Image (cartoon, rainbow, N blue to C red):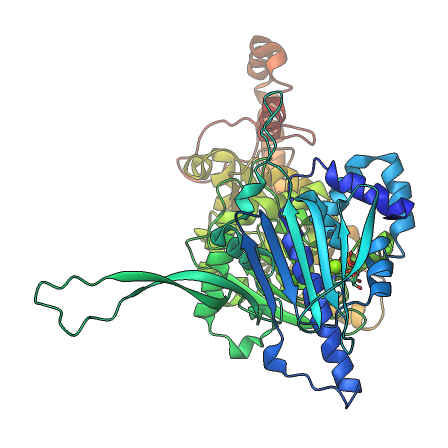
Length: 607
Ligand code: ADP
Ligand code: MG
């Protein structure tokens, strides 16, 4: 018996004793190797004219034997010589194995994670198998060889037989394990069914380029006998047929112009288990340093658990048509966590073998591009399909606001223009930019009011007071709104239209800027103002004077009120906030950075 190299042994130990629950990926790994082997044969035939390879014959077969408790994955690919069996299966043939060893030494938990994310190829078979036999015959050789191992100390390689070139990987499943200490056990028999294997193939290997075939049992009606009487009842019989299980051409590799929306919708619904069509479909092909295809969907409704802790964001990550991760979280920023989809790149390593760092860098590059594509698409929807966008925003807007708040405004540039708020004046949802562009000359701020209920807000005297001056007020009813605004001050000052007293002033400023004058002074910058906080500075000089005089005149009354209210109020005074006929006689406002609403939210604590 030959002994495994140290690093192989470590990996095997880890595999076998893995607490990693996703053992079912073994099939994906074996099929991916089979597909690679067929690829290699294909490639060789391209460069070697003496080779005759019939494309239609290339296939991968999966079969099982319930009594022997075996699963076999066969391919008619390039095959392996005895030397290659030794070299490829006796050691981990990856450059990264050394790294793996060091990482593994520090924490098994991390390593287990890596297995889960990228797979470690052939050895994953030992997660479910107590014995693995590999019968292989290299292309152009007459002899076959059998590699065999129980995955513990070592392996043997003996001469064997095989009809043609290619490889059979035969797994003898591990014994079922009863559960211990209330933990569930492991039932390996569950893989020994047509249904289970088909399920694994369609889930993990659906888009492998070559047909993955399985003998399946089907039922058919027996032919009607010649002498059948009137009371003849049709009879059925089972028969076996070789069926291709995988769909082979991935929909994301097709050009968008070649795919009908209804096919995208079907794919979306069946893959992501939604019963509603997606609101948006984004498909693109990236070229350059990193080549990949991406197919993304914005769901038509929010998944029920979107705002819960259990929600897992992420895109499915494929490499060479093989799924390597079901939910790659790194591909999506948190505020686009609702997006579903697939990224497929030949350039992303299927193994942990490549440098982890480089891998991260690749993923980052893809993630940045994806984020941009999503933002562009949402802008497009906002501008060209407003009704759909409003529905989208109702579903997912809260997450976008958190995106700004959680990045302290760092994402306001991208996300700011995607937010919608209720305009009390227009009676519809508007963006901040739309609000600002509709402002009359002389308006110095974006006014908003925050509270639980739009109806009540619209009746608040502080709101109607501002509306009466001809200025719109945004009515904000989500707890995150005001906090988001706090994080958007800089964005509003910088990106929103500047403030001018009138057209002449604007024109003069534009001309000055064109002539290369100083940049705009701060007093030209728009601000966000809560109508219930601080001094709104809306009153004319006359109104101010009037208010001051009235406060002085009735100082006895106000002093008495202040005394009666004590610590509950800071001061009592005449204000020019409340204008218009039949207005409320008094209102409560706050000073300082926190509004009443924000204090309420903060007191309530995080949800
Ligand atoms: P990887 O696929 O990333 O190279 P694996 O552990 O999955 O790593 O496989 C190790 C090596 O064993 C492969 O690189 C390949 O050379 C060889 N191998 C595995 N399965 C097959 C197969 N079905 N046919 C030919 N070679 C195979
Ligand atoms: Mg592999």
